[in-house]
Structures are given as C-alpha cells and as structure tokens.
Length: 424
Image (cartoon, rainbow, N blue to C red):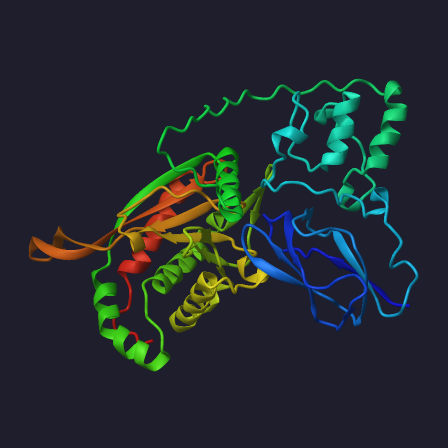
C-alpha cells in the first residue's frame, strides 16, 4: 500500500507557518493525483495543497483555522483501503513540532515564552511550556541537543534532559535589553475601532521585526529623469497598441537597479549571524499595493538577465495577478533586493523599511518638473527638468554610508545615461 504524507510546503525564507483556511476534501474522500486537498494562507500569498498520488484521504490532523509550521504533516493519503480511517490519533502521535502557534516573524507571542528570557532559536510552544514549568531558561534550552529535523527540540528531548539536568552545570541566563512597554491606548466616544485583517497583522509584525533586526540608515539623491520621461511619452502609445498593456517607469527602475547591483554585490546580500551571504542571483522584489490597502512583494527573478521588454512584461503580469490574489507561492520567494515606488501616490521621497532578510531597499519618489541649473560648455543656465528624489535604506551592520551612497549614485547614473534612441 502506498501512502503519502501531505505537508505544508516551503513558501519563502521569511515564512515559517501557514493557516489552513479551508479543507476541500473530507476523510474517506477519493482524491486524484494533483487534485487540491486544502487551501492555506500566509502573510504573503494564499495557495492550495495538492495530493501527490491518487487515493483516499485517510486522516486529517488539523482543522480549519489551525496555524502550523512549514513542513508539518497535515493529512495522510493512501491508494488502498486501510483500517486506520476511524482510528483516533493521539496528540503525541502527531509528527514532531506540529503544535499550533500564532505567526510572528522570528518571534513567539508573549503568552508562550518564559518571562525571564527570550531566544532567536525556534522552540515549539509545547517545548517552551515544559521549560517554563521546570524553570529552564531559554538560554539553557539553546544548549540542549535536539533529535528532530534541523536539530529542533521535541518533547522527549526536553523530558530526557530534565532527568539528567541535576548533574549538568547551571547555565546562567544572559541579560536581555529592557524593551519599553507599548503605551495603553484608550478609545474615546465616537472613535471607530477596526480589527486588523490577517495580512495586516503579519505585515505589522514583519515591519517591527525588521526595524528591531537591522539598524536602518537612509541616503538620498536627486535624479534628472527628463530623457526617460520624453522617451516613455514617445513609446507608450505604440507599446500599448502592440502589447495590449501599459509602459510604466517601474521596469526602467528595475533595470537600472539590477545593473548597479552587479557593480556593488554587497547590496545584494543577506546577514546570517556574523556571516554575509552575497547572493549569486539578482532577484528584485517590487512592492505592490493591493486594493484592500495591504502590500505584497512579487519577485522578478534574474532581473539582470532580462531586457527592458522582458522586465516590462514580467512586471505587468506579476502586478496584475498580485492585485487579483492569483500569485503562486514561488513568485514571492527568494527576493534579494526590493524597490518601492512611493511616487505612485504622489510622495516625493520616503524612508522605507528593509524587507528582511535583505540588507537594502530602494524607494523612488514622484517625478516633478523643477527649475534646475544646467551646466553647458557655454556656461550655466536655468532650465525646466523632470526631477526625482530617490532614497535607499540599508542595514548598517554590513552596509556603510560609502557603499550605500555609491550604489545609489550608480543607479542615478544608469537612469541619467538612459539611451533615448533604443526601442522596446
């Protein structure tokens, strides 16, 4: 008899769990290979879980609304009748580390962690609960060897450690910085209270985590976009007629940023403890506003290998499907750098928050006509030019002002040197 475990798939570096929003099949139902079994949701994208074999759904381990870690077995499918369909599964028989936990990027909610310590290492709420009951600080728990995948601790690992703990030397907890409590907010008569939706809560957690993780520094530069504006005005009508879609500034920004990343690979990087990971691929995420006010970041993979037409087609496709909630999980994964277009909403500049685990994010502001000094061989003159302020926020742990400033200047140079004779 062939059996298949149905798991929550990996859906990106920063995604550690998903919520089962709807079961499409019931226990005992027959399922075809590649048929959807359940719908799941994360802070980035909604998706379906597909059966790898044809068979019968013999067991579901979770109910709708449960939030479970990536890689967790949530159901079992067999291609023959089995006598375990109606056999109840005890909680301890579930795969290791499958307790339901609330999603907070790289953190655990306050009610599930001991008050005397905190840890950057993942521990399930069950393991944390046992540690709290037994008075084991998390700094000590970090030194206990785990038997599960990637060295994670299971309940049995902790219980076995407790039996021999008396013989082990005491590990003193490392003092943690005191974080001020969030001030209490009191609503007044007439105030409207709106509960955050699931995506907004997760975006909020991700932003707080990013600021807590990376010391942000922001640099600014002004760019003359006149040649690009004139070129786009000349090309956009024929492009829309031929391709059936609009020609925007976004592909031009992405092309310029990708070329600059090849010159400054330290910007196309991530940080792992004391190690700097210089990314081989240049995968640029574009922050996209959704109709409900939330935000998603689809990724243009290998942007440096695409021409302007290829980038334009990819940008329009991803943006349209992002707004209609039709992105695939892999289309929001593996970003190495992000661009956000503040000018779409009239902002002339801004200080964006880094999209972890990246080390920098580029923001482009609104393009405005301004009187500027133009240097010519005959002397300086005043002219009306299309100007734009561009900013970059970077992780000061690994990117200093020199590198951040040089990268920003290179992007500006790429834009100002745009070939107005090219076609698309």
